[in-house]
Each structure stands twice: as structure tokens, then as C-alpha cells.
Length: 300
Image (tube, rainbow, N blue to C red):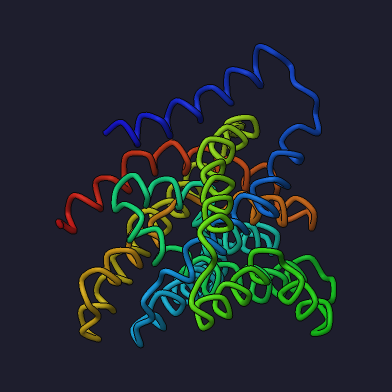
């Protein structure tokens, strides 16, 4: 309970600072840079060498792609039926196909399932959601905004993303017997900064700009992201006989709030950014209730 309270406290503090203290406009970007390039990279380097690899890890990565491709199919179909613009279809595909598996996912998984759960969440995020963002997200943004996405650009994004590089280095370190204790201790301490800074940054960027005529789109979007998508992953895992530990993390990660980076990508490509940010803000608030509820339903 104290771990969940820490998440809420950091989030609320960020919201209050943004509204009352009027911090520099570039503060969220600076904090995000630290979280991605330093804290998350250090956490990956610290945890990956301690992870016992299992053939079922493929499901953690595949589940994130199932959510993304399912979102694309769902909103393309609904868009045609409801006469949505291409911008709306693209925006909802991005924000509801890509989950906040890192900034919110890691803190919540650690609070609910401990460090062992966090190790599995890293696999889902790096090999699943990150690649879905870098590859699938780039393609969707290009298609629905009328731009072009080159294979070279996508490959460069994947291979130069610091946490992905850390993942590769961490695997090499594991094969060589792990890190010396002083190095591992430093990585652990740097990685520990991820939770408070990430949630504080989310709070700084939290926005709600609900407009008339968006209710149906928001309801359908969050109904998929917070309920139907995790249900689909749970059913798929049961059908495939995936072990309880891996299935639990796959379901919880698929149930996370929409991804902040996906909303930013929608905004950069003029894919109805106001709707994307509304879905993002409401999704973050609701996920603080729905994810722990999903964890309770999944049991120990």
C-alpha cells in the first residue's frame, strides 16, 4: 500500500507544482531525458543480468503487439462505421495501442508485484511496447498524417535507443557472470530514481481538455485500453497455457494507461492532439484504480 501511495503522491505533487509553482516549460523534457537515458537504462543494466530467461518471454513481447494491432484494427473499423476522420483513427490507434509500460507501468508493477515482476515488465516494455512504438507507431503516424516512414529511420531509432542498447549490454553482462558488486550498486541506486521522477514528470504534463462531441470516442478508447485489451491478453495466455507469473505481468502491462510518448507522437503529426491528450489524462487517473483491481482479480 505504501508503494502505491508513493506513486499517487509523486503524481499529485507534479500536478500541484505545474499549477502553483509555474516551473520552467522545459522541466518535463529534462526529467524525461533523465528517466529514459539514465534511470531506465541503469535499471535495465541492473536487472537484466539477474533475470532467469524462459522461453515463455515471447508472450510478454507478443502481448504488447497484440494490443497495438488490435487497437489499429478496432479503431479503423469503428472509424469507418462512425465516419471518424483519419486523424482521429490515427490518434486513438497510437494512444490506445501503446501503453505506459515504463513511466507508470514500472512503478505500478514494482508496487504490486515486487522486483521479480519488474524484471518481467522490462521484457514486455523493451521487446514489446518499445518496438511497437518505434516500428508500428512510426508507421501509423506516417500513414494517417500523410507522411512517409523510411525503414532506415525506424531501424536507427531502435538501435540507438539507450534502454535498448542497455538491454543488449545487460544480456552480455549476464553471459559473463554479471556486474562487480560496486558497479551493480551504482546501477541500482541510479535506477531507483525512475519511480519518483517518472511519476512527478507525468504529473507536470497532466492535462484534461474535454470537449463536446468527444465522449463516445473517449469511452470507446479507454474501454479498449483499460478493459478489453487486458481481457484479450488474459484469454490468449490461458489458451496458450502461459505460466501464471508471465501471464499476470502481460495482463497488467497491457492494462496500463495510454503512453505519453504516443500522445506526443500524435501531436507532432497533427493527429487530433487535443483528443489524444484527453484520453491520456483520463486514462492515467482511471488506471490508478483499474490496474490494482486487475491485479486483485488475477490473484497471487
